[in-house]
Image (spheres, rainbow, N blue to C red):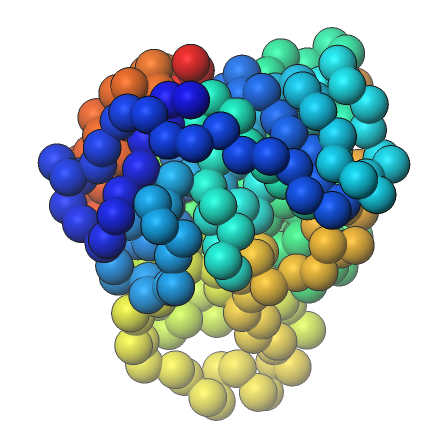
Length: 332
């Protein structure tokens, strides 16, 4: 089968595309014929070696997948041949990645794709949607009437946070980097959208919070968080959710934190158990089927163009080029 793979941590230019052995599903696994995969920042960190993992050889890149069950291994009972499925959390903990024509995946990391949802959308929502749902519900316990702030309302995670929070009947405030992205965020349901290129975010929050109320959930997606600014806008017992900024070392204003009974919660979606991720995925399926969650797909490539896809993700994640809204999706 064809796959995009590496043999050791490397630059974008060293991603290889070619033939590798087609996997056979082992105990409890399902063989998925890939219809779509998506790129995430973590994919570029693993590929480059910035996140150091013991990788299979060769290592097929990628975490997310959507496709059709091609074969079922012994002991796997959740799916039948021909069923459409989607999943994430691959390419980690010794598991092979997904940027290949076929992938053998433990059935506990797979979920049925609603009939009304395309494979591209299912792939695009996988890691980012599960991340957003875990952050909002498992960790922040978002409630109806809460005020939720998220940076990057048209990004992969940010756009899911906006929609999932709205589905939970929260008021949503978000930031974007252009007028076009502002319109996109508004179309997703954001109540207040701040263009950080034209407005000072802190000043804009000072203007809108008297109407919306202080922020109950601050969902931080930036690689350079600024708790000094964030804490001043948060409600008592507000939840400060951190899922980015691996190398960040911001100053932490202890006084503003403890006198307002704030909670700081860090999490990585791949630490969530299979049951926790399945609960999130089940909720995402309901939202997608009810047209309450629709991923933004900002760029599409073929599997053979995996290097171009990784370059685009890297340019936006590490260099802040601002040339991408939403997710990058690849098809065979």
